[in-house]
Length: 212
Length: 212
DNA sequence: CGCATTTTTGACCGATTGGACAAACGTTAG
DNA sequence: CTAACGTTTGTCCAATCGGTCAAAAATGCG
Image (cartoon, rainbow over all chains, first blue to last red; front, side, top):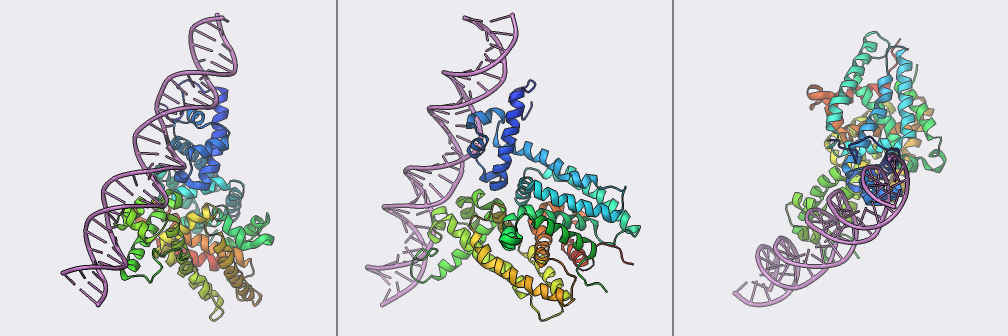
């Protein structure tokens, strides 16, 4: 039994299009209100259709959410997947940080949706974290550990290193309201991401202790 | 007109105690489900009383939330308030990071409640961020800027520095499920906060570039 | 004790929720 | 045309929501 399709047969062109339209609207609403806070009516209105019509394409609110978050996790982990042993370790890490920050800038809804789910104990995606996220992080942690052993970067905890990159970059999506308010109208505009990029590069590479 | 008290007169001993009991239960529920996701019934059950009884002490769900979050913000900002010009700048920052990490460890519910509210655009606490948080951050940013000018710490953006401290420390409360799952049963136990403390100290002081 | 006040609860209310359903509508192939 | 299929919607439903209310129970106090 297919859990997502309204019919067993192959999807029509309209079904494909409308499902995408709905998922985009659902991302808006879920990201802003969380799963429980979001209503099907809100999503339907954002997608420009009636509620029963929406439920013709997705059998339930839960189906929308899981479809959304499974797809999202793939794009979300892409930058980490690209981390490899080809280039210079320092510039590999630098570009990973940059890519993650760009994702926070370009896909804030995805970041917030994910954060919302984790905050509430990841009730719907625990298995994804165990089966997909953890193995990937373990693999990359081993890679980073190799760099440390080879003296390419300072020796430290690679798992917490990855956590700190996630935390600092996603902060600009998840806590956007706070960031913009605290920075104020001048510094909180579009340039805040470039400021953040410069700051984070310095933090991760040099730290704060004064030179000399 | 008092917005919180059930009666105009002075609070009885029972009122004081029950209100605290309710707030503690409400913190549990709000932190896990967010404002909209939490129900008065859930809070009442967690507090061990009936719903009408709870509403005798707080006139509405909103009243519980605002009481909770206003009180919370004060304890939350206390570590930043303590940041001053008395000691050595490097050890001042180091102990600020340590204190923030301890708060993430000891008050994860408060951290999650705050994160939940910000994630959804801070609809109920925008004024607190503008009137309390921003001025405090601006003041401390100026203090840090002085340290940079004096060559005590590396020159960088003090606002983003504060953001990165918040992000990295609160991550261990807000994303606790993810952190523990990724670290696994061995490394994800009680020791994870000491590991995090060691890692963060190194990150903020030294960065990742290898020495020499 | 007896009375007033505080505390607690069962019953209830209107609004909103996720979702079901059948009927209607649109489209296309014969 | 008609039959078949895909699409859309108005209407409805049971469950749950935040909150009210009157009356009962507990408590404080002279």
